Image 1 (cartoon, one colour):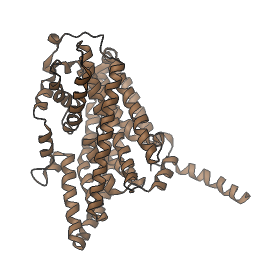
Image 2 (tube, rainbow, N blue to C red; image 1 turned 90 degrees about the horizontal axis):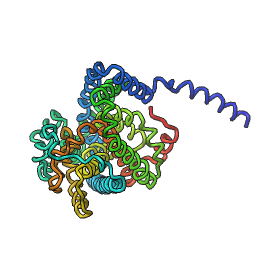
Image 3 (cartoon, rainbow, N blue to C red; image 1 turned 60 degrees about the vertical axis):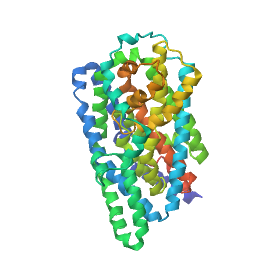
Length: 437
């Protein structure tokens, strides 16, 4: 027994020596960047508003490698699995999960905004609204139909998805290519090997780019606070607070319930991915953290084909944060304009939002575009009422991005367990230990 104690005593210091100092951990550096960026914006707003390029450069660099990573991950995953029926099984169960989670998100948002009638004291005059602010979003929504969304999944050429960064088109092309490699059998082995090795190289690029993530968070936060200021937080504070509270509740309680059903702990999962969702809160970009999340999910023991299919498609089909924002934003406008909406009107809005929340994926200002596409179902609310949300949107888009990202991380874990494509023991051990490297 004494030998065991001595061994444990010797191992513990070694483990500590091998761990990173706290100031070198990315989530600590991101938090420091967010705090410093906010302080700079308050003290020197003229300087803070010029720092937007710091965040944009990082996001642009990450997006450069997103499409090849998604393509390679899906192709290699499907090809190595070699079973089209199993891929179809994963896709079907992922879509079922997406629909259930998105519907619950919409219901939670609309229930809360009815119980807590945010905006009811504003008494806005529709004639006084500046509709010029939202003309672009209204025009974008006119061409957004479910048919056009489905047709847009199929690219014009093979290289088109990579040039435009259209995630759903990349998934479509990669799935076809993966099936083709399965179909040609042994002839495809050399191609699969080359693609598999290429995947490691692209993830290596992500690690290099991630070095500037704290600086990007600093610049993004400095710009947001300088641009919109604390005045917006005061004027629209209840709506911003409401969206944050509901989103956090949804992730911890609702999605936490799905995780518990799959055998995981929501606190451990949030802790394991804290670098990613903290960056989302600072830089308002869930896609930028997609490659890191996919890599970490594979390290947790989720199979490559599940990660490759669920995470990218979920960023379009499983936008829980956007769903919450849409229901609360629409009802906020109704309350602000003193418009009473019947339960049947609200139910019809929920039904339409099931489609519009997905159809706007990949469109600039997706939340606004989706709302603009939904509003014609409620003729009493003019599209110009979106101007009421303009100031608060940048602050709400942060929690929206973080909720969408974590919703799809959780979806991948749950679907992975559901289809038996997750090494449960490895995942439990790494989540409990907080192993992120």
